[in-house]
Image 1 (cartoon, rainbow, N blue to C red):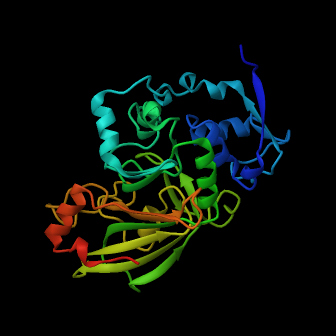
Image 2 (cartoon, rainbow, N blue to C red):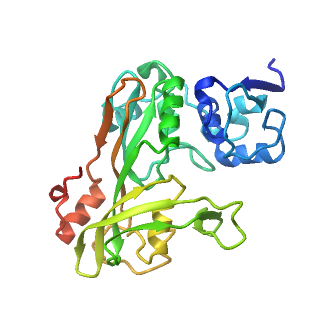
Length: 330
């Protein structure tokens, strides 16, 4: 039987990594909320001290971990990787692949599937990828996340070492992410920056984030987003390019709502507004269009992947007379 507690040493190449990101590399089945609980209760410590999830690790630091994190099925059954996948599920993953080499896989995530498991979520990409370890030679690891209803480019590491290196790429903001969205109205100016710290807030429709208030500095998450209008439909709606500098939960959705231009089809941040058109599908119109980042092993090489608009956004673009091909990003 395993000991009730184990201690892991932070490797030299993991120095500077946030604790929560380091934890995801070694224990990907443990969700953020459960990790927060372990930290608050002191079951997870760094160098025998209580720390927060955003603590930066140092090489040689000792991370105390309870053995229960290696048994995620007792905490969240939906997170247990399947022993194998059906041919339909394997084909589902294969159809998503936009780019693959010996180290990474880039997927084109469709609408409506969760990236990771949670309460009531039994089918998610993390679990499906775990079931394809035989295909990729190791357990694939998610490098970043997209919301359930956000579509587009999703980066996956084939090995733990690759995930660690890519984690540092995102940590140092060396990855350039571009999203396309349809928003209500036309922002003024048509190109700008949103800087608004965010805090998590529970609501009747689930977790969401809001703008931090005075006195909430300790829990606030700094967030910055650049936006640019590509095209517009009179004063009714705009097609925008969004480039997040930071990567907070719901950042783009919350920031657009904060400047008075929520993303079309956003059931959390449109606040019950009437649809801009009955002909437009009431689905989130937010798409991870492009990801550019240095390759984790091939020096001088870049990974540059673009995902086409998903079906519901293609229909909307056609309905509104927007041309997906007219904008060539540099």
